[in-house]
Length: 147
Image 1 (cartoon, one colour):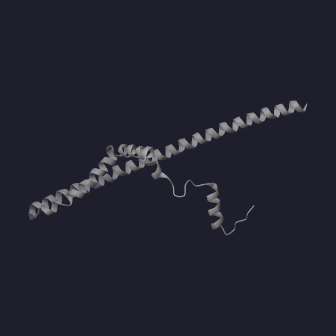
Image 2: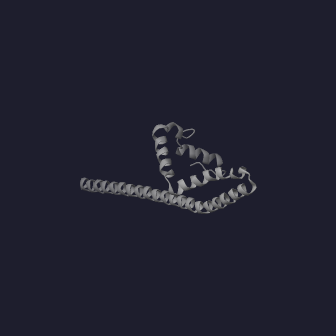
Image 3: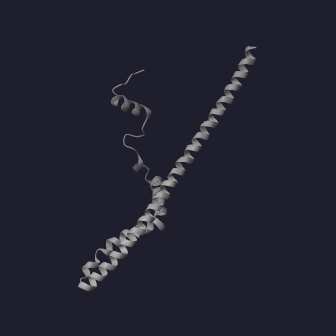
């Protein structure tokens, strides 16, 4: 009788263990998908911000370029055209970020860093551990009760 009960109990525990493992995998998969979705949304917002900024900055650049060119012609001083150079770099960067290939180039560079320069990504003092967090928590807590 005990053997039958034990066998049934072992089978039940095995099924429970498999169920828990499946749930853990499912939860991890959902978390990874959620993190990916959040990252994609943040990147989309960054690109949208860049495109919106480009509209305003492009308008400013156009007006500034026309005004500075007119001033340079009217006053016969080509020095008025100098501010157009740095402003054009900013305009080009924003255009490349919003509509160009800057993000793809940055992604490629990041992948290269991950593959070839792993040592530059290491945290000081190594990976954070539960023990280090607990130690810091105990040092900061005035109401710590050790159990």
